[in-house]
Image (cartoon, rainbow, N blue to C red; front, top):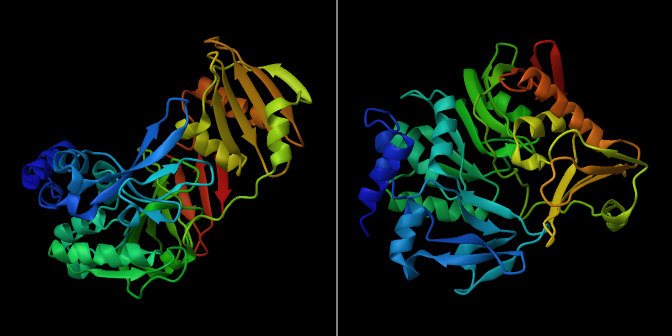
Length: 390
């Protein structure tokens, strides 16, 4: 396997310039070592989706091609790590079975690292996963300046062994990222998992003037903030959007309580209000600015969609408070019929955000200033608009 050529090609696509400080770390890191097996998502003939196991050793050419593509490789689905799956492993994809760990696409890792403004002497705390991003960090600043954490003991154990095979021996620890961190005054904390709020422990563990870079769960926001003398932090929303798996606290994500009755109502009932949306149908999770703004204004909405065999398309919005909305477009018409019920009008909230976008050309969350208290309460503000998280 000529992985070195493949790695240099990957560096050329992600770090771009050979004089970049990130070119050699990517070009000399054997990504395939960190992902010997992975889960690939395939669509079945009936429109369903399944996870199929891919074994690198069984097809070295495909392993090389996939490992050095600028793409995310899912290594764990639910509680099933690809390393432990049967050779012909297949998992049916469902709402209860979510990807729980991966090797993030290299360009996104570099985007987060660049946003952190890492210096040669920076002491880093990074998230572990497969260990690939940790290896790139070690190649950049040296293993003695890198601490890597994950809540999953197997991920830590396997990453530690694979890092050693690659010649790196950083501190790799089992740790809930939202709780107490390994002792040390870190110059940079970079999280490639999404957190619901900025943990207060990060601010306590950052050295004076240190920087944190993270994404916020259920949004596409990348927050970049520097520690202030009062123990809080100030910064901004980065211009680039990113989506990462949410932080978990155990073997799998907590199962959200389902309400079969609410789901049944959302699918079939006439709404308390029935209107026509002024906008083309758009699936909110596929956006970043609309999704992020809506989550700040009306957090906790469950978005679902269905494609009918007749060419129709239906979007659903559900909330634990009993609110629901359903919008359906037959064929390829741009207007949709919207049914809404419950205590709030969720689709009206979405249309309000989209109207804002249509009038102003962008949403204030894009490039917003961020102020974080020592307790981790974050306030986003721009052009007279503000929203608080935490």
